[in-house]
View (tube, one colour):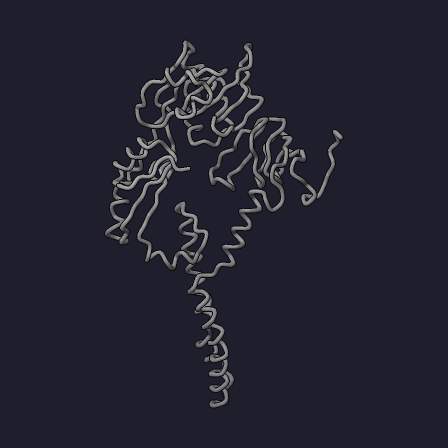
Length: 362
């Protein structure tokens, strides 16, 4: 009806439009209908960055809005939202007790009456109440009941500080029997900070304009390459254009409507070499040969206008770490699994010393 109405969260339904005011927490997973701003999603990604939002951007429940009000269409509410699922995983994790802890609880239940019986016997034999307290203090089952949970909590906390998330603490009891290690590529064996190394214009459009179009869209993206594009645009002193619509379209990539100043709006798509034929069938013929590393294609108004090339440096400790797994931990199989192109994944595998490679995995 065009009026703002306060309603309980439980009454929200898919398709409802809500207004997320400045500094409020978004209560649903949804899509921005109107407005521009930023949201803090560090609770979800762990990265201390604010993500820019515009019409078409996806928002998640639990994200903290910035300085601007946003109208959001609810796509998932209640128990289906991202925040609710995270809380469900945490609750399930708390309920899953490792075998050693269950054993300690069982022994503690048997040990407690035994300790009380010994204390009473000492009191009866000596007639001294101090003996009762002394035996009870010495024979208390508290160290048995507390020691294992403290050790597990300490291990989980230490792992979290090193960037390892343990969903089920019971896995700690089975680590010594693990014989296979599976590594991701970006951010695990590489630094996760790809750098833009080359801009290849595919038309007479200048490289700076190609980069400005790409950066204007990537400012609203969570893709690992977005940071590299924005950093390159900032280093070159480029001004980003306004974006009035944005969407991640399956089979195409990042699609948006960019508004250059004093020029007509342009429909811009950022896609991969493999998906370019779905956006610009003739564009693939103008692409240069693959040169290794990561790539993405910038398409403007249905025509491929530029190819962006990136490189992500391997971690210096990657090869010695992989090499020590077999002799130190008895691992017999080490795999590198990534959604990136096979040539890029195999290049990294050779550097770090991994023989088994699975690329293009989504």
